[in-house]
Image 1 (tube, rainbow, N blue to C red):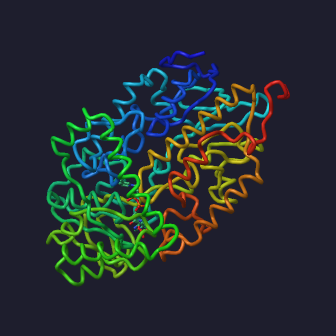
Image 2: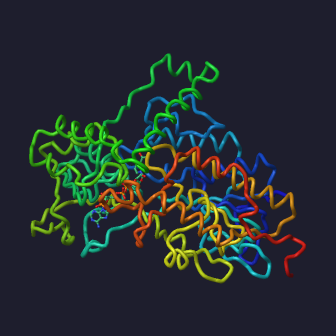
Length: 503
Ligand code: N01
């Protein structure tokens, strides 16, 4: 059964659907395509007016991918049209839109539909989902909201009283004309190091507030040559072979990140050489040199960030921020720097995403309450005990520090779509991962992570939750994750047949 998507839904009407997908980024869109191919009934809910997720939202100047283009497409929809080895944001967003068109999923997407709550109904054994565009009842919910979707704003004294322009990197205000203005960028993560060089030449003055120096490697970005582009388009298997080689090369980094940090020394050396070559000023070199193991925070790539810091109109401020005044920022050494605009490039709520507060499981507790107690734990990044028939894409411990998330997403799609097939085939009403299975899975994960650079590289990062556990990253090779998600393992779940569900 497929429901037509209408523009308005009367509040009293509850629309029944087999599967609801929340979010239409790489993960949600992939789920929609796979469910559509499997002939399943589903709707995708999207709070914005377009597909794309993080690649739709992050439109800041200089936004580009730090994973090679060839690894940044679905395996079932390769993109022979990439123009560069590392794609700029508009090209990735255009690709995602084109895939949505090609697989005709927009007609099964409700745009402008913000999910407010999803509540497991213990009477109907379905999810009650309340949105800004009406109510839904679904047998299965797939949360595909992404890990990097909720901007994290810094809790700095006085920041709400700033009278100039202020916006987060993921909510860039394109109406704000920064040309010739005095601008501050707070943060030096992946977003900031792309923004800084993109605006340094046009703003009047730029203050970059660094709390922790990032490790930055050279970015081997170039335009694809005409023969390469011809080969991508016309030589069967060429792009797949190129992907396979790149994947393999990247996978070797896992050894250094998760197992033996000595393997990271050559990368650290390359990063140090880049600092020496690109920065003349010794004091600035000292300030940008990290004091923790490379890979502990996400390794960044850039050829133009250090040269931008070296410009006469750019200041790297490392004294820490004491407070924000209506006209500027006061550093901890007491110096006030007046600015016309502040760009807040301070990252996202990941292990404490506000989206968790709106999902209520079988005992009425929200995911936020559960995670607050246990940490952001799940099973195979896809299920959480206490939350029947709820699947996550890009869930706990599925993130990567070294290669393309699209590979992990496709692994999870296989698992979740197989779960839905299994439910249908066996007339199963509900599945819920067993707590003992989830516990053992997490014990193994945390054991594997203990020796990793992310856990003991000497830094604080968004990979770790407030308990100090790494609940974001997958510690192994990505093909190991693919292996464990190849089929839905019903034996790891408590299941109830449709006919046995109490009415
Ligand atoms: O955010 P971040 P991001 N006062 O959390 C600082 C992906 N991504 O948006 O390091 C002062 O990395 C914080 O300092 P510290 C990628 O996975 C991918 O840059 O915590 N500073 C840090 O410098 C990435 O990891 C691409 O000490 C404060 C910065 O703000 C993820 O998105 C491109 C502060 C936040 O860095 C997030 O990157 C862009 C405070 N109160 C992003 N609070 C690709 O190319 C935080 N900071 C694929």
